[in-house]
Amino acid sequence: MDISYLWAGAALPDGMSYATYAHRGAYPLIVTALLAAAFVIVAMRPGSEAERSPLTRALVFLWVGQNVLLVVSAILRLNLYVATYLLTYWRVAAIIWMLIVAAGLVLIVVRIVTYRSNAWLISANVVALALTIYVCSLVNFANLVASYNVAHAGDSATAGQPIDLTYVAALGPQAIPALDRYLAANPRMNPGFFRRYRDTLAAGHLKDAESWRAWTFRGWRLSRYLEHAKRTQP
Image (tube, rainbow, N blue to C red; front, side):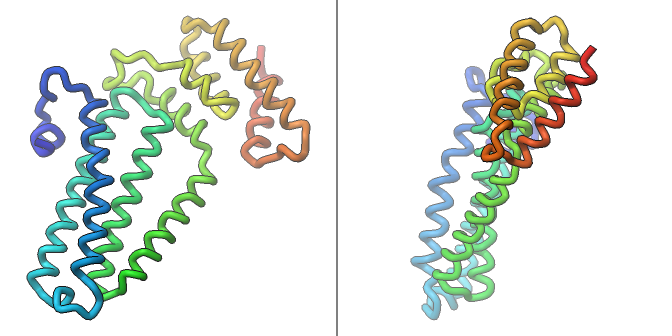
């Protein structure tokens, strides 16, 4: 079915949206990833006959390969979903989750090929998770989501889906640069309401930025942007 819908370009069945299709592809990843890890830990104990058995190793590789195909299909489903309905926090989280699952599958293959222990596999997954959390702490997700939605608002895939400007504004002060770009390009989209909301967000941010305890590099960059925008405002 995935080959038909994702690679052959077949239309989805009547009554099924891209949202439903994406959700059905993402949720099974939780079960299959846990099953893959459990199967390797139980069936491929270091020094056991199963670990040395070519048949068992081949079956495990086949199982992991099926999971890899499932991850790829889930990513393609999510790509169709985002291309149609744009980006949200939860959709970004789904992308990150799928990448974590893919990393876990790669680590399973490494563990089998290099005859590592189960403790190594668990530790490697913990390290991968910690690195993911650290990298995510450096990403300005509010600006990322807002900028993506504004940049792709006119794509052919979203031509019939107006951008949810209320959601973009609700992302907080970090969405102001993207909100400014959209309002400048679409002055008829109720600019009065969103302009006032934008100014309220900016005023709140600048007030919070007065305290040195609230200083962040991300906030400092936004303050510079707001000051520049105020100077260049006609």
